[in-house]
Length: 334
View (tube, rainbow, N blue to C red):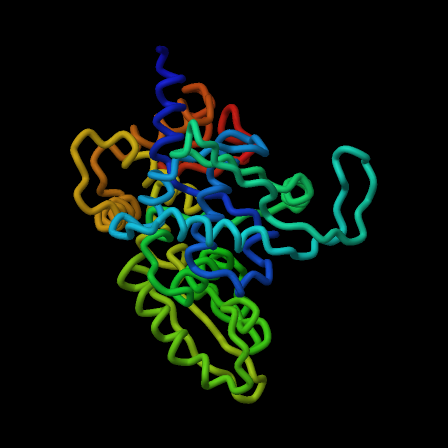
């Protein structure tokens, strides 16, 4: 087996950055349970890897990824999550691949058929709606979600706020470039969390729990206040790009999370606490203190993106920092 094939197999097994299409990130899917949302992420990651409408997953794999190891009734729980993903919703304004026609509106579901056969009852075949795939392909933009972190959330508030934080992390802030910032109305958050509150204050406890969970699980700072004048929930976070350390980092800001995953993927020793180790690696990258940082980054560019040494050299500025690029990883639409 050659080196490129080995790297591909390793990536499929360990590389857990989900490039989640913003059509899904922005969807009004708050009525789904946390388990169903995590199941959707798993299915999307599998599709991202193999780019096939029909995928096959082991129930044992789903059980582990969904944190159901201690649940003896896990098959019924997984079936419940999959049933939720068959609930209908509306897609608008996209081109249907088979006919080439423009769709005005389309009532569909995320997944279609879900089958487990007697001779292979430990497996489940899942078919993603073709209309949903057409919609994702056409709607540009995605949010990078670290699944190592996302699957550890125990509350929907923590999960959805982390997703929102990742979605808007680099959104320009005309008032303060050092801080990320996004505002949401009560109606928008009710749709996001699946709640139906009339008074804004009813959301405060859940939001505060979610922010605390993000700090404990992802090690990220997120702040919240309610603007009574404009009746909006205001979320903000310190942006690494504005700090002195980040300005000195030789790695492009857009590639730091990806490089963390690459380093973990090729780390020789056993990692006991992946999230803790991930945060350690990330902090070291920002400080330029990770051992063999530059070699690791160049290796990622060479083997994941098929850049030549000459091309990589051309990305390096005179101050030692590398410029970002737009090339896709080899062999993938993602």
